[in-house]
Amino acid sequence: SDLGSHALVGETALAVKAATLARELFREEGYSRGEAKVLKASAEFFMQQGNYTAAVRTATEGAILMEDCGDNTCATHLRYTLACLHLHSERFADAARAAMDGLKLARLGEDKRATLQMMFTTLEANNAILQSAAAEEKMTKTFKQGIEKMKRLAKEAIGISVKIKDVGLEAAANYWVGHLFLMEGRAREGIEAGMRTVELAYAARDVALGVRASVLAAHAHIALSEEDKAIQVLTEAIAAASKASDGQSKSMAEGLLEQIVGLQQQNVKALP
Image: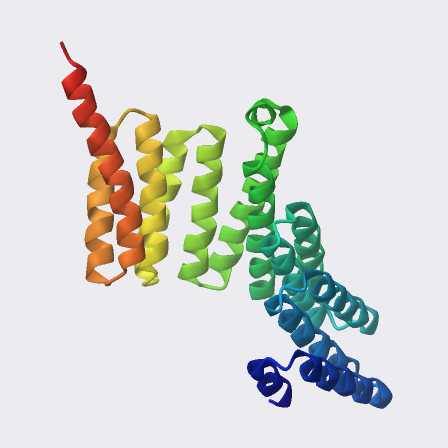
């Protein structure tokens, strides 16, 4: 709590000093997990300060320390922290590497929830790499293989979430499958996965994800020139968001709906 109160007051030097002292005490006692926890807290603190380099250095140090001790659970947490730091700083290749390291550790520890968390982080990092690729790169074999690899990971995530009976995580995994189908230009399969996600997300009371999946399915309908179906999907999503008082999700669905209606009106005017 001492570390937290110093940070709140903005007394950066004191907070760092408190963390360093705590770390030295843990090291003297040979309590590596305590030392790693201090490193993890320090990494998060440095990130809040906008000191990316120090944050990455401390998180990496903590992860290596825990791997050396054979504490895969704590090492996985630190690799996750590291991946998030890289994602936040838009260093997507570094984020993908940290996430993959974390995923390997989570699999070794046989912690299914940690495995899923690292799978989603890996998908997020690789998706950012693919999204930032130039248009001509998106036609390459490497790009297509990247999507294929991600889809296998997302389908594996569906299997694990079904095993642990977590509908919310199953919905998230299905969303990734739909998103990747759409990136491949396979709109019909994208709609199927998107609508399956909507069903699961609402069952898990995750309205925000349900609406995002509806928007995904609507985009796929538009790609197939099925504007009326897209309008229907979005109208239902807006109703669900209104009922849940989720203004952000509601405006996201409304934004796309307005675009479709606007285009339809333009097309009508363009008719001779």
